[in-house]
Amino acid sequence: MTDQQQMIAACLFSRHHDGFVRQNQLEKILSFKNVYPWVLPYVIRLSGEYVKEILHVIYDNRRRLDTEELNRFLLDNPVFHQLIESRVISYWNAYYREEYPDRSSYIGTKIIQFYRKVFYD
Image (cartoon, rainbow, N blue to C red):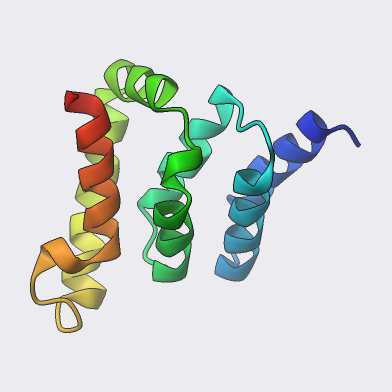
């Protein structure tokens, strides 16, 4: 398969029901030399996950994302952007509030802060 075909397959499998598979496919997506703009919805969607290992992969690789394309996507999809932010807050409240009493220290919140910085800068 070509790189683009592998990327398509990884994006599809990033929606798998198994969190380990989602994480593995996300790592594949972010390991490619060229992260295509059409991949952004898949990565952003994974930002709204409850699996913090997935969130760490996104945060650790955030610099690999094209900030111009990310900004454009967030501007064009404000409802999706808000949905992801709401999910991050909801999962923090349901699963991580005890571990991270200060929500700003939660990895999902750090990702949202990164998206906001891209969006407002």
